[in-house]
Amino acid sequence: QVQLVESGGGLVQAGGSLRLSCAASGSTFGANTMGWHRRAPGKQREFIAQISRSGSTNYVDTVKGRFTISRDNAKNTVYLQMNSLKPEDTAVYYCAANTGRGYFDSWGQGTQVTVSS
Image (cartoon, rainbow, N blue to C red; front, side, top):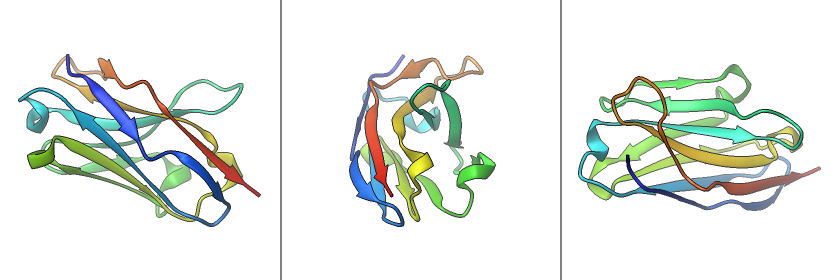
């Protein structure tokens, strides 16, 4: 497993932007598929986006065109650029790593994102 620490959450008005960062420990970061998930109040955690070690990306439909996942393997960091934020994007956002087991098996502690209308 790897240790993951998210940062960059906060309060923003609708239409605004935030960039989340996730710093990972361990020398195998470059080999991991990294992802972002979120849990909105009263809802289950949902997948948002992932990026493979080669840089291929996938997004849930609700954030396509607004969110961008990227990674900097030299810094062991993955990012989530969030634009055109909506109140329904309010959630705790979690960084996760798939270390080769076929599923996301390492998780950060989460960072709160609140979008006001």
